[in-house]
Length: 191
Figure 1 (tube, one colour):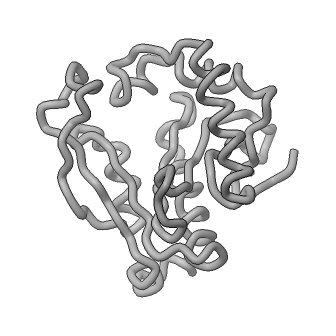
Figure 2 (cartoon, rainbow, N blue to C red):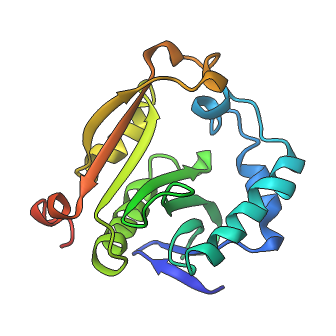
Figure 3 (tube, rainbow, N blue to C red):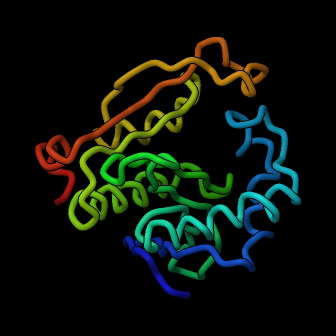
């Protein structure tokens, strides 16, 4: 496994063409998908034919520095989910989105914060990123807590995308959090 980034407990790596089943299993848990699809799983053919090829193409587009990264526990190697650090499809490379999707058995262990903190460090110290942003539904308190632990600041409320209108809490819309390189340094998050 070629490691992209390591933390105390996690190893992040590029996905490969052989990883479809990991993504299918992750997206089949209704709790994991609660604030993304209302609990509906992502169809296996969508993962194989659209999502995974897009993930792999992203590594080429961004020289492997940005994209979606498989996360494994260093102790035992179990797949726990993924982390995301990438710009909008045609956006500037110094404005990137942070994201994470973790398997339910590892929720509450601090992995989302740990992996995200390491990605912020890499973004601001080695990748020339100026601002990192993340979005979630207003009612997704768990994800918002992670963003707040990372010293990200609530930057905006956003409307619910039409395809998510049936999801619990969608009437409250979403939120966007941001942190700039200067804010990250001022918060001492790099220590």
